[in-house]
Length: 85
Image 1 (tube, rainbow, N blue to C red):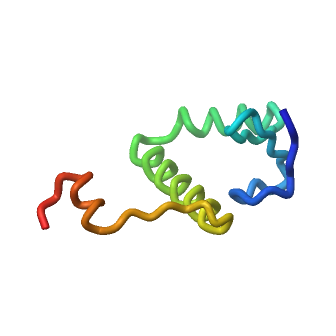
Image 2: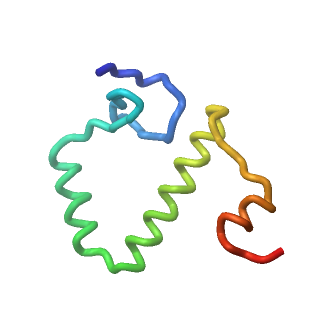
């Protein structure tokens, strides 16, 4: 396990990022975790879906900024999604 606050990634504010193998995690105070859990439990399904979409976009932007984003040609994307040309 290592702490690497200067590695490229999503904006985690003042929270410390730790790396366990190829996974990264953010260390947050328990009070922040409990507040986020309470918000998640109170959120509507639509709110949760919107939050997941936003998180996915932020993760992709961080990967792109770090030069780790992967692209799929349009024809391949259509094939994977089962969409006709």
